[in-house]
Image (cartoon, rainbow, N blue to C red; front, side):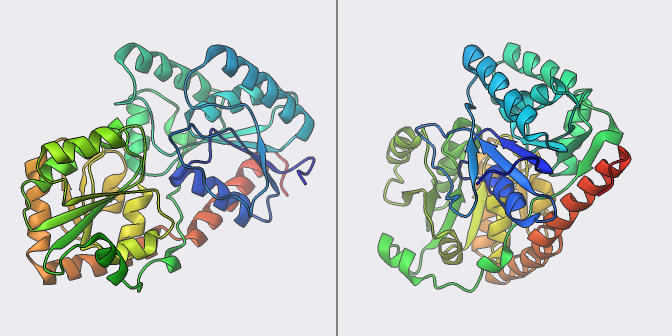
Length: 380
């Protein structure tokens, strides 16, 4: 049953498979000292929704795409929810929820404390120039009314500050938290056997939504330069059919395996030699944290918060976006050197254990909330 007068109203656009949704569910479940109501919209048809059976979720009319009439209605509904619940804090995740939730908070008296998490940003690579210009100015305006701006990596903070969004003193860098105990030590025989991949072939993987910003085309082009390797593409989205056709056109259809969304990611990661990421824009990619937790090195594009996860030359390699040759070269370096791959995999596991555990996520947010409420003279 949704409780009245929670400490926190947590609002997210949708609970699709991915880092923001998992973090919103995790914080709602783990921060027991801060009673929370979690509200979310619906996923689009091409997306897979997370299993949130262990969390009670209040549905609100939020949609990822820009829909002016529907968005005005969402602001009205969420404003009514805020006035009814009267939370101490509104904590928003993802862009649309950040706009709607903060406007609702600003319209409410007494005004709740406003916290927004940038898990990444949509100001580069998602929209055309005019739309990006508009959304940038919206974020600038909302930042002036927001008490705390959370980012998942220093790189995201620096980018947003370069766009004059918020002040340096408003930002807190709080990394993602992952249940690391789920990863590592799994059997890897089943996946190779199911897909008919010869044992002498290497196996790499890429995990994420099949959308333009993830640039899976670069990973497929790189595979043409790595003849003794197969790739598993885990995830789904509007580009699946076109990517499958591209793999066929490139002559690698038999070596590119599209698995869709899977519930056995830890087992899949254990079957891989390494993981790649070819995104053109990222926050902190959860898939790479999970790969490192499985003791797998990564080759990834040097964008957004990726360098906070993949330490270049230590836990994997970073390459420029949109460069199949550079990607193939670094992947080949790792595939041809078992000792280097093992050394980087071990370093990767230690790195994520030190920085991306759930205990750190929980303590970071609990302390932030306490300090924020105390600064208003409402210490709990």
